[in-house]
Amino acid sequence: MNQQEQLSVFDMFKIGVGPSSSHTLGPWRAAHLFLQAIEKHGSMSTVKSVSIELYGSLAKTGRGHGTDIALQLGLCGFDPVTFDVNAITSTILAIQQQQQLLLNGTKSISFNPEKDIVFHFSESLPFHPNALTASALFEDGSTIHETYYSIGGGFVVQDGAHADANSAFNSPKFKYSIDKASELLAYCDQQQLSISEIVIQNEICLKKEAEVRTDVLKIWNVMTACIYRGCHAKGELPGGLRVTRRAEAMNSKLTGDQRYNDFEEWTDVIRSGGDHFKYTLDWVSCFALAVNEENASFGRVVTAPTNGAAGVIPAVLLYYVLFCGTPPHRAKSKESAEDHIIRFLLTASEIGSIFKKGATISAAMGGCQAEIGVSSAMAAGALTELLGGTPRQVLMAAEIAMEHHLGLTCDPIKGLVQIPCIERNTMGAIKAITAAQLALNSDPTKAKVSLDDVVRTMWNTALDMNHKFKETAEGGLATEVPISLSEC
Ligand code: SF4
View 1 (cartoon, helix red, strand yellow):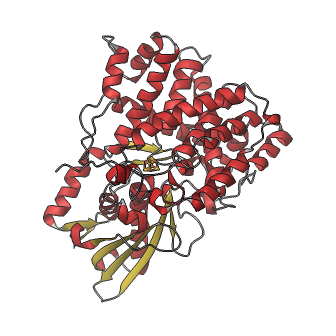
View 2 (view 1 turned 90 degrees about the vertical axis):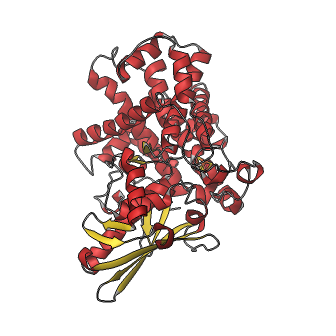
View 3 (view 1 turned 30 degrees about the vertical axis):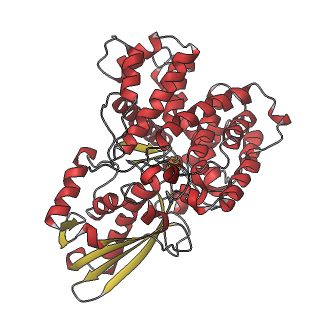
């Protein structure tokens, strides 16, 4: 729990690389922080060697989640937002074969990933289950050691610091300080504003409104590119489980022999199929599968609020755009179509930040309720606002979505973000849509459980949950299903 933290929409939605925000993106960002620590100590050119030690969940499921890969790319100074994901395998192979790493792109050092990245499978550090310590030896014999915690959603905290080093924590103060849903609702009532209008007022304390709009739309563009790629990629997922990608086959079945050349034409084809229940349901599942198959393949995704749960929000937003919103070609202007997308993502981010402050978005702390449960609540609330719900109905929808994810365990087979993770995004998306419809058809003043109640319940459930179900791959499906890894 981290109340008083100021979280921007760009903290909750980060462009990165799969398969895990806590085990891939977080360690990648931690490696960048360590490069800064090296510069602070002396100079990159005087580094002799670097080593990393992984603890707790980062050690237990780190290999399946690509933690070792992310650390090497981070130490090389590559940016997770822009690094060509098609170059990951060749870059890692080159480091392995040459046993050399170009630190921050400037200083060549000996580096043997097998020896210099140590997995402490039975040791944990007290602050958070996702911990790593990075060490550097300099030519003058001096050393530095820094410990970082990857606390979920790509957020990283340095040992002894108060909040994510890259979040908006130290930025100018937001106009509306919000830790709880009740505070958010009070601002909506006082100001007669929707939730997205409150959020935009906070965001413009950090940057100009035009920039906020542009940057939020960039997030949406990465999400749609990911869906489109995932719907057109065949084959098996990496990691050795031999899981077959399904989004492509589903897309082919649903689109039949209709032709298209790009995303826009593809969405026209989808719309032309109508909006009957089974058709819509299949598309929502297809969108969610597509994102998480890309995520499992080290593709470019947006943490929403994590990578394992990255498919829920794009699937529900594309469902809105294609099946119940104002489609771009029917909107009065391009701007008004974009407004819908921006409002959705702003509202979703505020709900996510309430969960992050009052509970957790880390599966290593709270199991899958913290990932799929939170993403479903974010999507449910945002969809409700766009469908005309009041702020109370928005919060009610978020509450309903989380209420029916409480206690959901994290038990990925072989520690890979594939089973149950990929399908689980389809479930999170459908629950979000159901929760929105329930809230829109309900009187929220009669609700017995508030969003703050469910946030607190989720946190207490997380505390009571056995560690086997917190991203350790030591319980549930991970131990009950005897699948052996093939050589790959
Ligand atoms: S089971 Fe859920 S929380 Fe665990 S890795 Fe998969 S998606 Fe993430």
